Image (tube, rainbow, N blue to C red; front, side):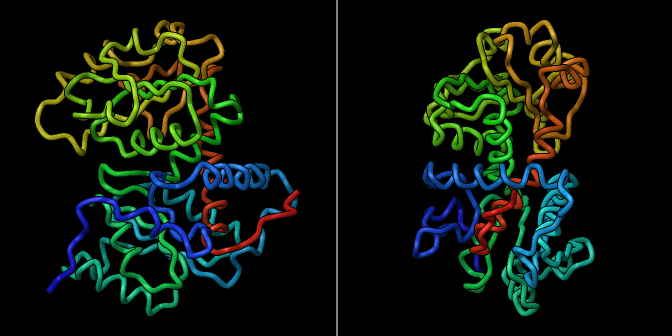
Length: 331
């Protein structure tokens, strides 16, 4: 009898070891605030690594990290790979197109074969929600699983690099109004960010989208819902723009990209509705002229490139934590 993917996330306890340390990083939901702060604090230590003479640390020397990307990605895969290399781990990128998985091998059989190669960490990106949870449930006890994005569910490391970027500019989350704008319905980033912002104590979380791109019942997550871009941006401290997930859409959810930009694109004029010192974020890849104007993406309030830099540091932090490594004394 074949094992099936679980229909939803497993209990958050699967992420933690018996002594309360991070074992797997699958979801923001269920993790305590102290754990998120530890990830941010540890990542902050790694942020300046590229500017130091010593660019690598032996925290994961002798360990093997395997990137299992069942879904296309460039930025996420590369930053996980760089993070592992900077921690001195060996990195293997599985070519899914030429793997046995593409020939009909079950996910569980694929994992069993990879376990036999003595890997220590699986970084998993999968088009099925909860696939990383499934792998974490059935993989060998010595292996840690990191969720690099699963279906519509979550993208926890993206959320944490965004939290780090926010904290670097606006340290007190309790004072922040954050507006998340765009394709909320298909965005795993939005779900993870809402959970992270709630856990870190953000004052107000807003979601802005046309009705066709707004999930039913999202109010239950404790957010304020806006279908007007202008109303939702008023006095926001942080504006997070989301990519239109066109590859996940079925049917005509949008009349046209041009009309979407005219109603929901972030322009310089619309940005003036937010606070003068508001920061602009985007998880990438950026569709200029669709979600955001180039003048805003490249403007003084944009921190998009800083997000990319922080992505490596956050993934280094998470890898070192799940492997039980101590990253003290980096300075």
